[in-house]
Length: 349
Image (cartoon, rainbow, N blue to C red; front, top):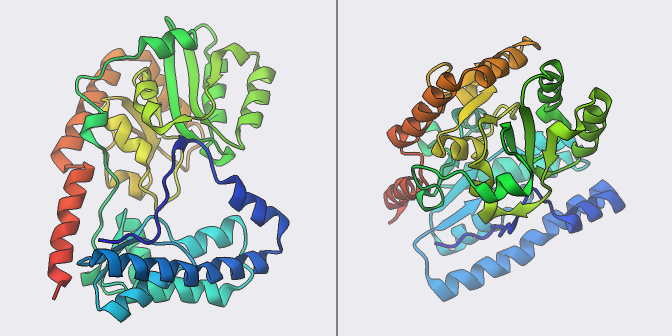
């Protein structure tokens, strides 16, 4: 298998400064043309890899402006399996805007339709892809998962992390990821401020553009000492940091995503609070293996969070059930690989 578009991310909670610099300093249409131009360089790399390794198929993670894998698969008559994590045209149009809309739309639809099989990470995303003209028989939902070796059971709470951040005797409300304002972690600070007599402490593992706003809010509420932001850590350290969480926060998520942190929380048997969105409900169930709050009722998040903080029995029950759900649904990378191998076999020859 050759994967033409892959990223080796060594630091968790970071983003590409080089790419951001280009976006900030170049007119958007030039940046987009450069992105599309890269596909020709990528095509050469893919061709060289195919000639060297003689693969049975091409496995590609979808990216906008990148039809190089499709071109290679047509020339070498190889099946191409396409992993799709998000509808990038709609996502980028919403967040940054797109200047050359027709080119962007064409590359997305072309790659989705020409792939032999498309692997979206949620059913919500699968429905989006099907609406763009991809046949249902060529779509298989494969959510994210975990590597069992990184999440041994039973988990051991890291005393090193506890000591490093002086978290002794605190109820730790933990979040992992690139902190953005739309995550709505401000509600966690509001809950802590309303319950100052409690030992609740917000631990943010990562960094991001939403950090400054949260720090200002914590200072304004007089609870700056009730929040810790670790900054960027290595990907390998993430399970160690997650091990200290009492409540695992998934305060918001894009409607089509398969958030990796959710599976990691489950693997560690953490009590999870998450929004009652369809993609989340594909994985976990309210009051069974998590508490889901209504995205339509602003106060529901804080009410559900309080329930988890107050009841250790509820946290233990939901955490144990979350771990069981991981096992029952086989949400492991190895299981994903087995499914993909079966799909490749159907398209060979």
